[in-house]
Structures are given as C-alpha cells and as structure tokens.
Amino acid sequence: MTPYSRFKRRCLRLRDTLGLGDWRFEFERTMLSDPETCAEVTLNLEQKLAKFAWNRGYRKGEGAQDPADTAAHETLHVALFELLCAAASAHKYDGPRVEALEH
Image 1 (cartoon, rainbow, N blue to C red):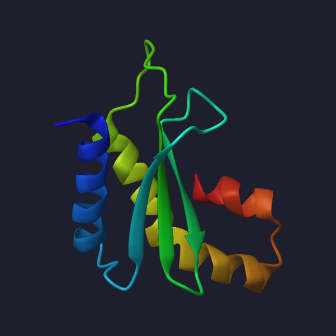
Image 2 (image 1 turned 120 degrees about the vertical axis):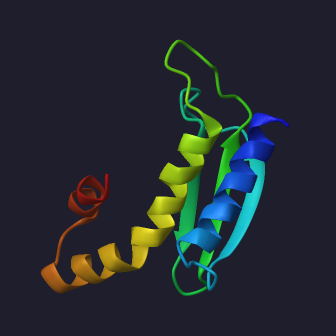
Image 3 (image 1 turned 90 degrees about the horizontal axis):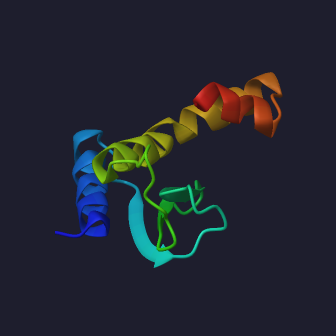
C-alpha cells in the first residue's frame, strides 16, 4: 500500500471514529509549495467539506512524517474547526491567534 493510500484510508477511518460523518472528505495528490509539508487540509464550514492535499513533492528526510500520524493531525483539524470558529467569533481572535491555539 502506498503512503498516499495509507493516509487516505486513515483519514476516512478517523472521520468515522471521531463522529465526523456530516463532513465530506475529498482527496487529491498535488504539488504543495513547501517540500517539507507532507499533507494539508482546507476546510469549508458551509459545505462541510474537507479537502485533503497529499504533497507529491514531499521529500522524505531524517524527520519524515508517518502517513498515519499526518492523517491524524489533518483530521483533527476538521474535528476542532467548528469549535475554533465559534471561539474566534465569540472572542474576536484574529486568524493567527486561532491557528496558534489549534496547534
């Protein structure tokens, strides 16, 4: 099984485990600007859509990221997204502050 397949499979399994069945997950293999980024997710709350991008240009180095760990990290972004949006609007946090809280 390829790393991309493991990543995708793990994301879908975690979606079910975390009760995110109302979210639609889409996946693509693309070139991301940072070769050290294994994957990333873009979220659309109105559509309940999570678009996962697997970096075809990812360079495995000494600190290579495990696809299963990366899947968990990106799927947790989905799980926390609504909570963070509510916190941001309620407390008027700006984007960088909310992103820092999330990580």
